[in-house]
Length: 513
Image (cartoon, rainbow, N blue to C red; front, side, top):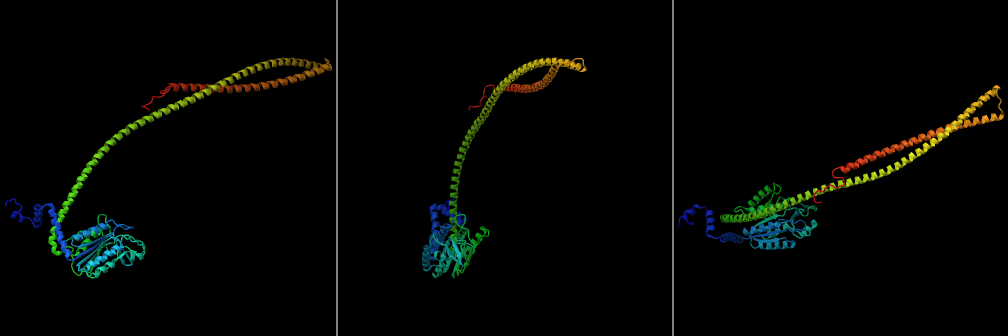
């Protein structure tokens, strides 16, 4: 035998027993044979347990019409698989109606009566207490009131009575049915399950204390069943110790919100794993744990590879998106520049249109001013003609007045002569006839009338002259104002014509718009 031979006696002595077995199995047997041996160990344990008479009824109800449960079926499936590995013969039922539940409970009771050593009942689903009685709710149950529970649900006492009638030595009841009450608000219906005691030689395990509710869980299993699956495979401990460890873990995980509860009247010890088979099971369990760890690592490696591939694809997609984003940003910048140019051109066009409007207004104003100027010039000419005519009239009137003054002077002279003659006659120097006196009186009257006419004519002449002077001043002022406006408008037009961007030419446009 070579020194490096795997079966070298000294080398074998240096290996601990568990490492020796593992090294031997990994070296001598292929992987599939190694797995087969582990399965055979479990099969041997299971056959031994079946021979000892272990029977389990596992019911999982989840598909309720009102309040479906996410984990009840997973809990029942995993408990059934675990019990099978632990040597129980399992009778499973998923989403059972009332008739199906009652029928399988009857068959379960008949099987237990055939010299079975231990019977286990597990239920995951909705449970409700009404007037101190616990009911397990089937699926498709048409329950509308408390009176319906007695006829459309399964009384938990019915199960206890059936198992007690089978005279099984150890009866185990596990009720993970304290979940939220689907009939909350119904009179007489209380939260959680009521406390209850089973027959002699039995243990009843509740997922939480009486009157409280249990969490359905956010993972595959509910909080209670998750820890029950963990501790029920611990070798060499009694069922009371299993439930105690479950209670500690659930209480810690729920921060005191959920505390599992048990009532026990067991008369003999019961272990899920036979205490006599502890050593063998420990080795197989460790080997199974190593195998599971390998599988887990393989799955994790596959996930990492898949994640890396997905990451690469995401990076490529991100790079493509980044390039597309850059192109879009460039196109957006070009569009923005074109938009700004368009806006500037629009503003220039608006300015040009405004200038055209102002010029049109100025032209219209100039035309109106020219027309007004022509009208005022015509009025001025008319006023000048009126002035000439009036001046002519005044001259004519002055001539007539001069003639009248001359005549008046003559009359005054004649009047003076007559007055002198009158005085002389009065003094007795001259004697006038009656005709002469009448002639003198008539001349005096005519002279007085001519005097009044002269005064009236002078008054009217002065009034007309003042009116004519006032109108002439107003017309001259209006003409001066028009002249000033015309000069200002002319200056404005000349300024606009010589300003930048005007002078009859449109502003130069920017870009291609």
